[in-house]
Image (cartoon, rainbow, N blue to C red; front, side, top):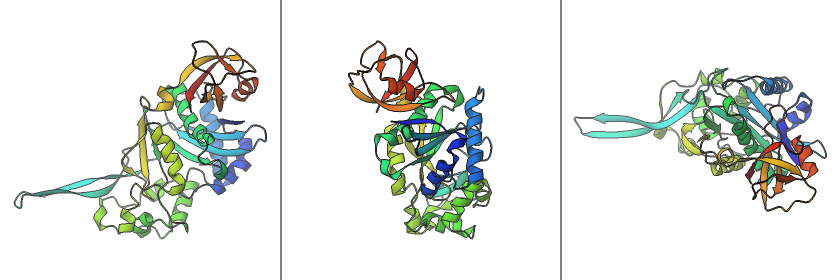
Length: 338
């Protein structure tokens, strides 16, 4: 059985291996021992903190095979962007111009550096073992974060965003970066992303052009990258799109990947999840497959289970499920259909 739980410092060696295998552009999962240790300790402090309103907390989760102890994935939530450092994006909107004398008015698509998305909850760091891509475990890894938000709404903003990794070639080249960022930094795309993971996006973002970039003036290959998802990032995009997330007019600063946006009042795993009482049973008349979580903080756990939740009474869970969730009979769980 696989279970999602908060990260622990003892996970550091396995987490670093996940970082080595992660997709280029996932800067929130750096292959660096000190940076990962800092991230883990920050997450542990966030789970323990008495939070009255969202701030710079980071909630880092790992997906673990309970039988072997092996980690097969990780994901993260930043409670509110822009609290610890500026959160930069590129706004993709028409730049209007007109001539009254010629009676001409039109808009030219342009990219503008902005911090419009500050103050929103950010999903990031999604990575799962290649053997489990497009399996129910991917749904668990991504959506259990949303169930955690639903269980602890005071800790998060009412608006949730995520930046999906944009297109780059198999040799690590990004046409979008080559057309824009390369002119301001003598760095290849992979090195720029590596530095962002080790340090901060801010120092690079602050040197990006402060004036609108007219999209028609970019090479066609770069234009085609705007809002384009990297093939290996498509699953993360698809899961959240099914959750009710939508693309908006913002793209990633470095690779042009799309930004997804959803309000907590519209997100499926938050709105449709039910809180039910549990009872222990070794025999379960399963009627469907569900994501199941407790409502803990540092003790948060989430699994996939075949259950019968059709009635109004307590929901039967096998003893192994209760153990995986870290609960006993009579406690409440949160369930939503897979």
